[in-house]
Length: 156
Image 1 (cartoon, rainbow, N blue to C red):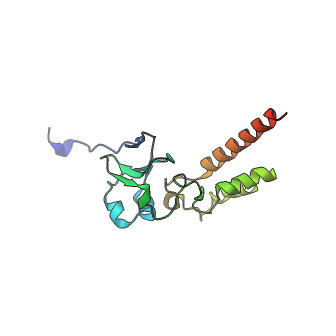
Image 2: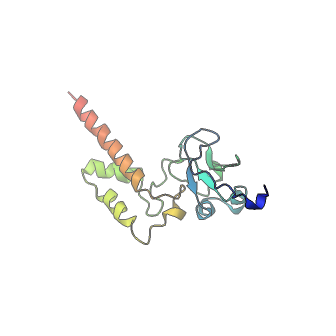
Image 3: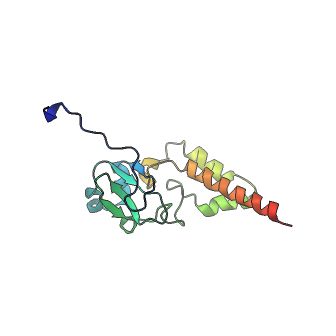
């Protein structure tokens, strides 16, 4: 059959990091351009992925096995750097979430949820994985709350 009649395969949507095997997140070129120097972006195919595993040295890779390591990132990004803001658009950090928990409020977390819906949120560009931070903010808050609850239950 003539190749002109064959549809080019779409890039897979579920890719695993070639180094650590973690499930990665597909990212667009605008995300790559915001986090990598131009020469690093050019090494990757149009379809690229972000490895979210904090301890893995791979930041981005493509379906051809080409990788860009975390040391090529233009700035610290969460979760590769736990001190970086979880919310790259508005700067919410793990410390802010921990402060909400210590104060017994959800002020900062609720603010991020609301701001994430605003036109100022630019997750596809600002976040290293191109995704909104809200699920990660909620996950981290709930994890801390569960740990605090278990600590209270274990206290004499």
